[in-house]
Image (cartoon, rainbow, N blue to C red; front, side):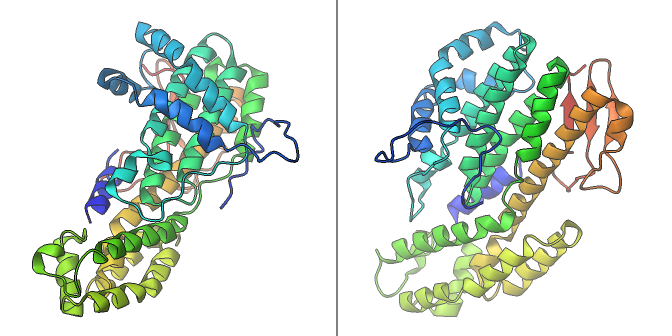
Length: 385
């Protein structure tokens, strides 16, 4: 499918309700009032984000590393002031209901939960936090960053694969920024950060994305099938968004009969149930088991088999986000309590602690998390050389 290829490209380049005790502010409401919806407030901020120029977006992609004294940053943050305030306000509301999308089409990738502008809002918050930390306003910096992390989690929670891509795309610069500003935080603010991290839940497991992805895929296919006749002609298979290999297998299995194809789709549930179970297996065995699943199911359930690579990308992102939390915790311990205490912090993806590299300015923490073709997992503490 075209959308699956887009997701796969993004993945290979560099609980049902989210609990928010780590930052939430209570807002008084009357019993007769309906609770506010954070998604409506995010829309205000997204409206500003959509107006960013290509040059702004290019610089924003380096939000965690760009020189903080760049004059462009000051001007952008001033322009973003209403959007940043909306981000903070939305984070204080514990209800976030995105507009439901029962059928997902290509144009939906630019709306609501799946709008890439959500990631750009996170990046602007990162710039604001770096500037605030340099000015000794660490508590305000944490407010911006944890408001940004709230948005990133809400984008990914119970979402399709693309939602998890955007979640990770927001979490990475936020945690990179936290690493950069650690040396600028005083002891009390470091302690506050430690409490926030202790209360910050882990990302949802990769398996949580399989069900939504299945529903969106099958709903999209059914919608296409409803527009064609009882037999699927050769030139119509591509219109249904099947890739050529899957189309050839499904054509062989169904003879091009639309009703038989619909019946086949109804029978794919067990294969997706198995994929849901396999994707959360212990990491050392997960990839090989998924490859075996894909080989076994390719000739029977090509839709499920075709999602394996993207599902593994989601699993890697979940592990990446888990590693970032652990590395930031280790960096906090390093800055607050010293190297000896840092050495006692375990790397969840290695046999011992994290690797520490001292630089002329700052330190680099390295995790054992490593996949072929993926960037190595590091976190910069303080400014780079």
